[in-house]
Length: 243
Length: 124
Image 1 (cartoon, each protein chain N blue to C red):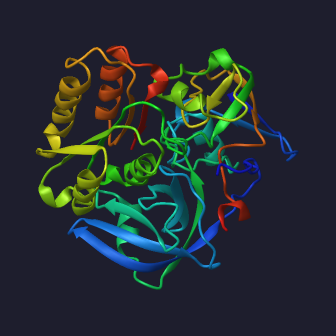
Image 2 (image 1 turned 90 degrees about the vertical axis):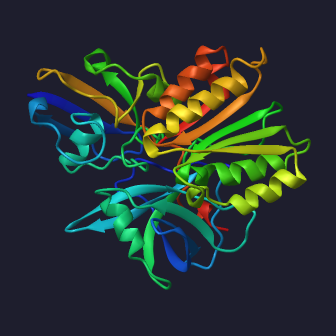
């Protein structure tokens, strides 16, 4: 799946061209784009990876990363998910894309991935759109044989921003997977995630064999990393991606 | 003036940038005054798929001279470097390695490979 890495130091990155096949609004400020390759081929990626979209801003272009929210096994269009942020010009440009539009990107990139699930209890922590890389990782882990026990803690400011809730509910009914949500104002989200992680995986028992995958925005991700590593979990068992 | 000499493992011609660290930032990606910031601000390409936010390893560089002149790496940078192909004891992420010393002479090598599956290999 990982394939041969390609030259990085060439002057220009190799780009692919994507076509917007479909839009889906999770909420007024949160959208998914479903993309196909203009070549008609299928994008290969590992669950958790992102693409780097070339975004024109005035006279220049910038590359901005967007996690792939769909499964690599899905042969249809792949999905990216994003939300409006104050001053976020790149994401504002993405919100202006319509079905049929095309744009360039490179990738997939990233080492915050699960290609094969570890043989240990697996714990995911996410907030808002940071569920995007977690979603395919979760599914890949559940498809492993034997699938590990999996738990997800997922926080958002309201129920509307708990993305893929119906899918998560369905998974929780059919697999060894459980999840819990924390609905908190934005400024309290990481305090809530910290308290839940501490209660579930630090103070409840002495098991330190779990593996963690944390994704979110800002320093709260680092607080969670430090909580878990400080509690005795192996450094390389605590994976994180800070946006 | 600080000096950044850039060698490319793929055989591209060497580049030399002379700059005043006090004038950072030179670009909008990476930490101000970082190797990535200096390179992009002087028209020299360095991959930075995550936008220079310490979330990938595509700006991995190997420091051949002046390693101790760079700002210290964070735990987050070290965690990412662990996953960089071709890791060396003097590897850094270009987006995080800041050059503050106005007299620094830094020599780096941009490795041939990174975790970058761009190319036809990304399509099937």
